[in-house]
Length: 202
Image (cartoon, rainbow, N blue to C red; front, side, top):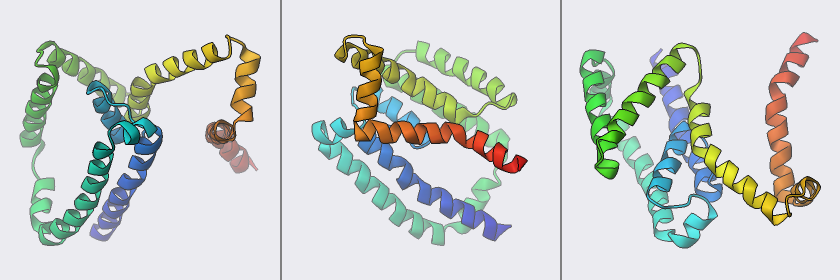
């Protein structure tokens, strides 16, 4: 069991860099964690994606450097602090949950020094708890909250650029190699469950 857990942790740590690449280059989160980071960047007036490298290159390279240092220190502390981390994992929930709640309250208040943000945090926490109880995945919900407004604004800009013509919008979408490739990839992702069920049926 310990070997399987170590493999799982290694794969989890290796996926962090891959999730950061689309976030830093395209502004598209690779997982739920990078979606939260994108939301934090928007709160501070930053635009993730290509403009992040142009407008604030120091922040981009600071993030890349942090990831590099994190992997180095992860190797060092992972080899030297296995026993301590094992003790932390076995820490009872009665100790962890109050600490997590306190840190969440402090973090929510510290963004704008507004106590109303704490009530918003508690409200969304309760909603998230019931969603999780009924089997909803948190990752897609967070992605929808973060990217929903951005998709709406981008769609409106695209329609304005083609004088609100759906035919021109579709033509521009299919004539650009980058947008065509992303559209085909999206369609394949959406069709994957159907194709899998069809293959299993045979």
